[in-house]
Length: 441
Image (tube, rainbow, N blue to C red):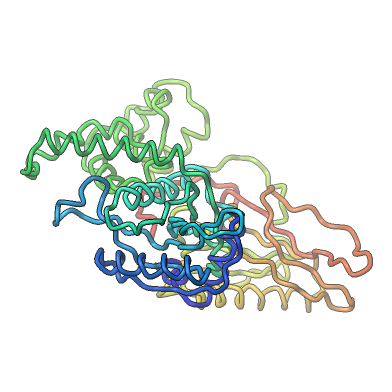
């Protein structure tokens, strides 16, 4: 992944390391270095020993990347898959000004195709559970240098902005380490019960047959079996399977199952749910009948449509931009990107948007409204200063989490004023349509 490569880059090592050490209240190191463990257990043991010596003797801090540590309680099994944390930090462990040893702060890099402000708590929890697994595994490792202790806090590197600049988030791992240790013991117990032989392919459906009942397209998307369960639902002829796939809750399914089977609606269901099911079955939009209250389609607006993975704020496959200069119909400007997460892709998007904003400004049609379909799309645009013609002030194109951004008042002194609004819409002409296609398409 692009973000994981950036975390290992020399440009961000010093920033990540010093911010992590600072948040933990540890002494500032005398020097900072980075060492690559190349994903090998033997190399990781050697680099840990060297980093420990440098921390104790010279007060230096070392960031180790691409580590490989034997899985918890499986060190003696040579073919067991190793735990591979993205990075770890070794720094001096002091007490009353005396160096007693070194700290090992485990870390991992996760972007979830979102910037930090859009990563929800469940995703952050999953990331810290992986950090805790690395901490538990290395704490039980016999090759851990004497005098090196695993810190009770861990670090998770996440994107600070749309240009994937890493930011370190630290959290106490005590509860997480207890949980991963418990899960590891459960897996080892299951392994002892099954034995050395793994289940045959024809036996696998018995292990996952119950998962379709608990499938949820929102909460299961990060599960390793998400694609398997979704394909299982798509292969089923049961109308309930389609309703499960598109996220209709189990209490509302009996009322709309007739829309899928063709027998008609059998019960009372919210209009939003009925429209979603009808749009899915027919492939046609369902009109809400509500009048628009936003400025979509008026002169001075810019329509932005992104093709991206799920509701991610990062990872853009394509973009279409249409500026409205007058009541006459205008054409869309489209662009497709071969590398969705590349910084060049985000810069190209900003160039397209900047060109549209400049034309709106030169036509004196401000304030400008950017019409986007959802909050993650609005979140893609990092704040950029926009000079307003005929004024010495500078406007700010920023994103908002509300339905329509409030218009700031005139600037006072050197404070900037924003002349660009972001408007979030649920679809063109208030249409509600759900299409059964792959997210990346």
